[in-house]
Image 1 (spheres, protein in one colour):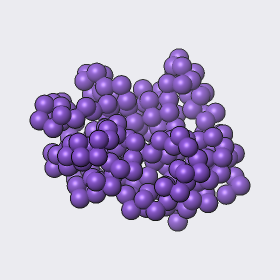
Image 2 (tube, helix red, strand yellow):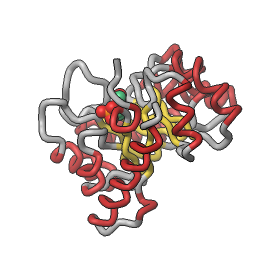
Image 3 (cartoon, protein in one colour):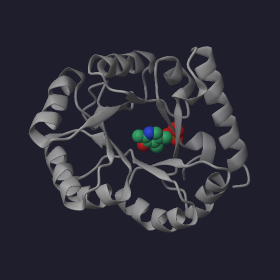
Image 4 (spheres, protein in one colour):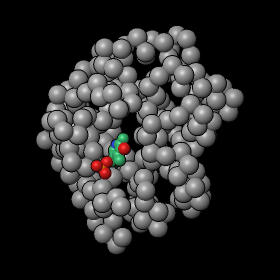
Length: 221
Ligand SMILES: *Cc1c(COP(=O)(O)O)cnc(C)c1O
C-alpha cells in the first residue's frame, strides 16, 4: 500500500509525457483512478497524494466506501464505469458525478427520471461497444448517433462524451480511433478510453480521460 503514491506519481508522469508527445496540453488528459475492489485503506493514500478523480464499477461497493472517504477528502469526482442496472439508477445519480456507462433506452429513461427527481445532473457518457462483443455492454458503433439523438430529444439528456473498453484480445488502436471519430462527428468533448496496459496509446489517439486501476493500486485479487 505504501507503493500507491509512488505508482500514482509514475502514472501521472507517463500521462504528461504521452500528452507532450502528442503535442497536447498536459491538462488535456484526466486520470480516473479505478479503485474497484480496493478497500478505503488503499484509496486513502491516493487521496492524501492529491488524486481526486476515481472510478468504481459497482454501485453497492461505491455506496459502502465513498461517503466516508468524501467526508474526509473534499472535492472528489466519482465516475461510474461499470455496467449499470436500471434499478440502480437512483443510487447512481445520488453517488456519482459522472456516469460513463449509459448504453440503452431503459437506462436513459431511468436516469432522466432520477435526475429530475433529485435535481442532480451527473455528467453522462455513452458507452460504445466498439468490438461488437455480445457479452459486453455498450451501444454498437453504427447506432451511437441515433442513440445520442434519442437521449437528447426523447429523454432530455445532455451527453458529454463517449467511453469504450476495447476487446481484450485485439490491438486497441483501431478501437481508440473509432471512438475518437464518433465523438468528433457528434461534437462531444469527452473521450474516455485507455486502461493500465494501453493508456499512453489512448492519449496519443485522443483520450481526454484514461481509466487506470492496477497500475496504481496493484493487481486485483
Ligand atoms: C477495471 C476497469 C478499468 C481499469 O483497468 P486496469 O487494467 O486495472 O487499469 C478501466 N475501465 C473499466 C471499465 C474497468 O472495468
